[in-house]
Image (tube, rainbow, N blue to C red; front, side):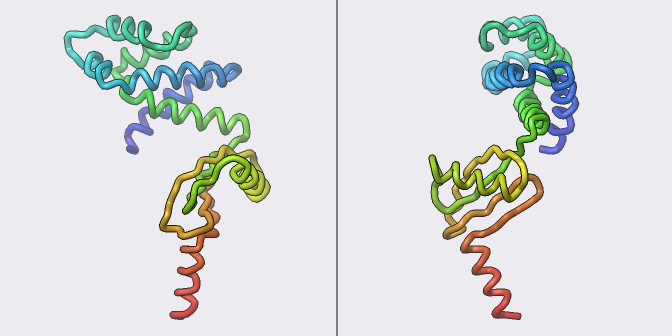
Length: 176
């Protein structure tokens, strides 16, 4: 949802600027907070007009991961005060993207007709890293309609070596 991204991006960027030197540790507690914030019961409590911001923050502290640093509590308090608890999951996604960009890692989504795991996935990742010229965090999505091969999406680049794509190319060539 575009408007959630518009709301979440400034929060993620501000948090990233504050914890830049310790961003990997912040990933852990931010993911934990996002998981807690996604709970339907907590969302209902937070949106209840009878619940105060202090009560919501206290409930969050009780169910959130242990030993939250002060920056996490301040960040959470800011989100609650501004009524932005519902976008915490989106904030975490943007924060992950910022940390990946800082470390030079890009996300690669591999669409495959069959599951790719273990050594085959490692080999594919090495080939893709060489092809795209950067370290990749590879995720696999099953897409049986590809018939065989893979379609790889890295940012706005697409590498399609699927059987489906080749059949489409043949169809175009034969009908031209």
